[in-house]
Image 1 (tube, protein in one colour):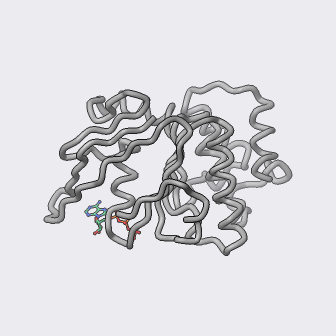
Image 2: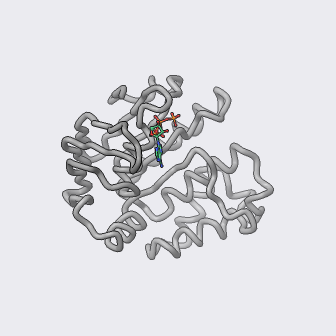
Amino acid sequence: MIQTDHLTFQYKKKDTSFSFPDLTLKQNENLLILGKSGIGKTTLLHLIAGLLKPKHGTIRIDAIAINTLSNRQLDKFRGEKIGLVFQKNHAISSLSVLENLQARLYFSKHKIEPSAIDVLLKQLDLHKIQHHKAHQLSEGQLQRLGIASAIIHEPSLILADEPTSNLDDENCKIVIALLIAQAKKTKVNLIVITHDSRIKPFFQNVITL
Ligand SMILES: Nc1ncnc2c1ncn2[C@@H]1O[C@H](COP(=O)(O)OP(=O)(O)OP(=O)(O)O)[C@@H](O)[C@H]1O
């Protein structure tokens, strides 16, 4: 469950201030946030992820007002509860697919059954290349590794920043369907921000900034 109230933000040394519409997502609900380049989509996603602090307003995730947490509490909260899918891959290039996932799990301190890693590798069609180093992977494989890394620790919120903008139509559909299926399977909220309107039909809740 996510709720934002009267969120505003201003970057240091920047005149422009952002004022965001209130968002409410019940358990299992997904949201697509559209908007033209520079409107503040990534800023909003980073506020929800606790990577930025709002100037005013509140962000509640599972009833916890994250803007009241200390930086240390926030790091812990984010590591455990939030799965971030970035536009660019953040895989460690010298590690294999499997090692990247194990590293993500290690840092989240979350324990899962070893068989659950296998299941995820299969679901994301990464099992045959699980021992390949990240630097050997294609863009599509890296994108799927990015999704696996974002959800391996079973977060309660998945946030995806432009997950499809570098993908062709077919891979765009595959990636968005995977994200939605994963969110449904683990009964968590999914928020996607993009200017890629191809993915609009996949979402019931859509807002444009
Ligand atoms: N760290 C920063 N410091 C100062 N200004 C920033 C910073 N990050 C972003 N901005 C500015 O804030 C505005 C909104 O940026 P943001 O990245 O949130 O937009 P966006 O809607 O996600 O854009 P895009 O679709 O191009 O990624 C832009 O004008 C950008 O230049």
